[in-house]
Length: 112
Image (tube, rainbow, N blue to C red; front, side, top):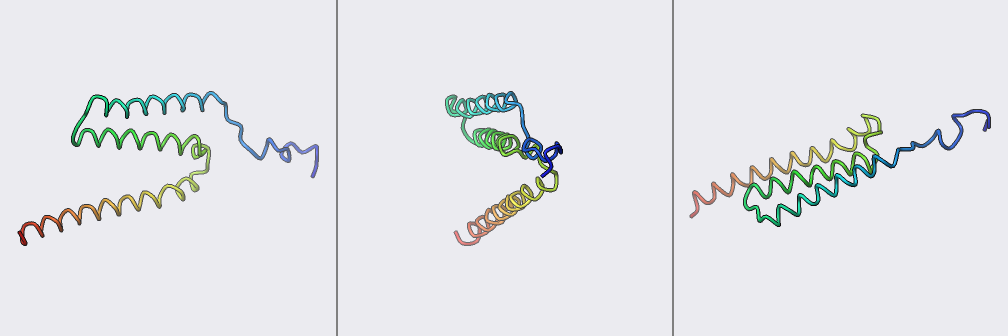
């Protein structure tokens, strides 16, 4: 190990991110969590309630994955390798739910 080589220092192997970005994301997560609580507090009902809850949940998960799991600073190939499989599973689940809804409708129509 050459002590004169700056690339061999421990600081060159890791990334140092300013604490300000973590505090801003923490504040934004707090605001999003407060909005999730307000959905229940104001007794929003029906489809609007679930859409708001899911949108806020996905926003919080995206912030956590991108900043606290350092995906923002990773190579795009690694981001794709981590994010594409769960997205494919989500698409599969949506397709299965649509098929289940259709099957239930057909059974209700013909057997009741």
